[in-house]
Image (tube, rainbow, N blue to C red; front, side, top):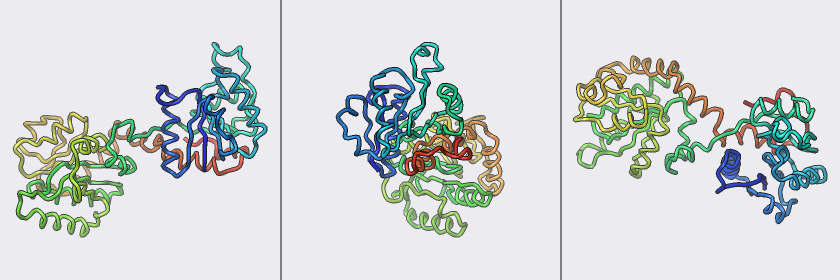
Length: 357
């Protein structure tokens, strides 16, 4: 579907709505739609009939270009073959600085979307529209852009899983990846949608590196955890930027080594404010002190799994982060809420379909 997204300005102009429409357009393009972001001057040059739908951000409800507001209102009334979506971020009628400007008439032949329940109430109050005729679709984020992820890590969309444990390591036996795999299997059995992300490939300095990797993959399959293992360095090595991106998007570090001289990922994880689950080695306590969550190198995987699950279900930071991933991923918002709206005729939605947050 070819779509137009309209606003007074757009990138490289910096602003909240400008960020939203940039990310909205990127998500829609990822979903296969052709999207043009247009300001007033660009809209004048466009062939309006080329667009199946036009998403108008704030131009119907704010007084920054009243000529364009009038033009678009007339077009919405006349061009009924286009799906018009009035996307409400702000409402001039409830702002004392703009209350003298008459923008109280609802847009004809349009679907109305407000970015929050507060704005839904504001727009209904200003226009007299029934609440059930206004949908709530919250703002979202392009997490890869906001977090500065590399394309390699971004395309994995790791935030769609309940738990991502990062293990930056080469595949050598003292790194104790068997314990990571067995703990992952126990977490799966507990109902956790987990990914255990291992960065390295077999160590070229170790004669049995490839054999060890094969053992690990066989163990993962035997434990029923093969789908939860992410061997990131299997075909191509990660860059430093890729590893940094993994730290940014992971939920915790899992570091079960049976022996270390220091453990650089421990302090790298601290720098990224990651919770750390690690083996109870003297050197780990020397490096981390009270910052680590420790377990014995011979601890049973179900005990470690229970420790991680307790943290996962009780830690407020991880809870709020998960909520953010669930509710404000722009691609998910566009897939679940905006695309169905684009594909339906402009009709008043049922009350049960209004509040989408």
